[in-house]
Image (cartoon, rainbow, N blue to C red; front, side, top):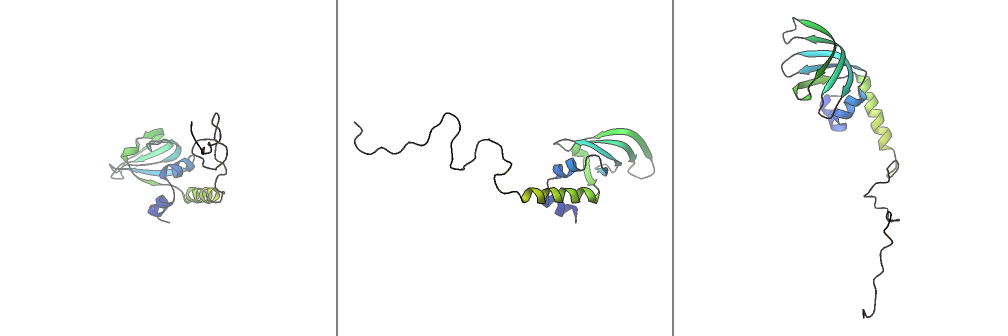
Amino acid sequence: MSLYNIFKLFLPLSLLKTAQGHPMLVELKNGETYNGHLVNCDTWMNIHLREVICTSKDGDRFWRMPECYIRGNTIKYLRVPDEVIDKVQEEKTRTDRKPPGVGRGRGRGVDDGGARGRGRGAPMAKMSGNRG
């Protein structure tokens, strides 16, 4: 499955959260590549890698680092193992099978026609007749 089709199905951040602890390749816009194990990522796609091997743009120099932090807006390309993609697909199908309303909290916006929240009674019936 191509990366384009994957991103049509899943959010990139959910894919990265699932990839935590797995090896990945990160290519930057300047041409450098970083191979390492994903430790963490945030909502801006900033990435923290461990056991990293950095390769220069030309591919003639290599650096080994215990860990590195990559800013999200410098990333051009990410390569994750197929097993991570399979795991995300399984999680998506598992959540798609849940009936509507299951697993939802007691928040606002639930229009179930039932009781309204604290302090608010049932809707008042229209009064007929004279209003004195």
